[in-house]
Length: 499
Ligand code: C2O
Ligand code: CU
Ligand code: CU
Image 1 (cartoon, rainbow, N blue to C red):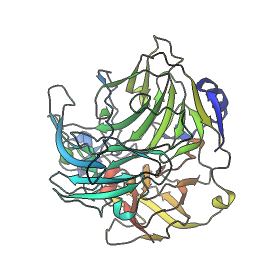
Image 2: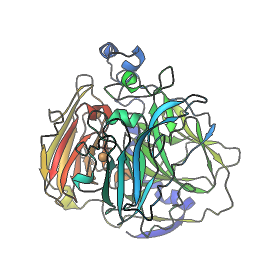
Image 3: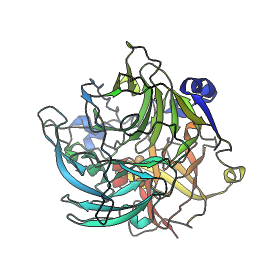
């Protein structure tokens, strides 16, 4: 990759020409969850009317953060020195005080809620001990990491209560913001809802030294989720869940309600994860300013993109740089969602470090070769349905059925079609395990500049056909599915065997 040096100010000028992003198409009036579907709530048992109608009525809007709690940063996982493993991850029960004086039952990794961040170097191989201290089976899935099928922690990787395993994970892929979460068929949504999710970062080995990368200082993980609490402020999943994707009215960032973040450096890097069960987020800055997107799910972008809008469906990630150096003291700034809801207000208290040079880069070759673009489609995927009636190619998940086969290391073109229904349909975020793919086209159009990086999840609009260039570097059985976790649990998932 060719590199250029420029300050963060100059960057906006240079990139101004390529800011025509696709993101506006997924605004509030996107078809997701807004279909004209009345009466659905009556079919959902054991719920008040409100939850039942969420997905096909209105998406419940989130409350703005009151900016009361300093944002917690998940700690970095500590490398063990004298044990026969490098890291330990324990799924366990706990309690969390989301609301003052009230204890909410939660799940967490190595703690009460969410999990510590596992940070690996590009190329590093580590042994991780995974332990299930829950009262139910779980799995440990490394979302976005290209590991062999048996280490992937998909539905076949169940660990029974009280059991442990040591697995080797190798970060044999470019630097990226990945994450980990459970994947037990039928209980994924509930376990994630109760708090099981953590960040998994692959650090740049070299060459991008000027990107902010001091974890927790100028390199900040942001896990955005929405939650629904019952009247006792419990995450009562069985009562609150929606089979079309559980949506909440309470925003939590890194597990905290009403967060704010004090920023001290002029240019900050944010690693954003949409960790919600189902909600799409469209992020903007409250003053309308633009920011720089530098990475997609699985890699740095071929070329950074200046934009003022970033849409992420459930499980998608992006890395962005925000320049705080031009703010005046009085100006307030927040990351907002649709409708101006403040998700994360900032307290800007810059230390005296200079804005310095942020090393940016330009693409020195096209994202895809002409030959790759011309490859024929060899796998067709059709996503269809809603609620419990969700299918892929007309079928529900069967752990004993292999749906597709693909040779290890061989590129194939997958065409994924989100088939609309009578109500218009809804967005499905499509995710494939064991691979970082490239988007070849959306309905025949080139992917927007901010999708010209490696991806493992892709937002697909109703009626849209997306072509993906898919390669599996490792062998094994991998699932692919809709990342609305309730759709996944309802069987909107298939299996590909890589041989
Ligand atoms: Cu986030 Cu099947 O995974
Ligand atoms: Cu995954
Ligand atoms: Cu779906």
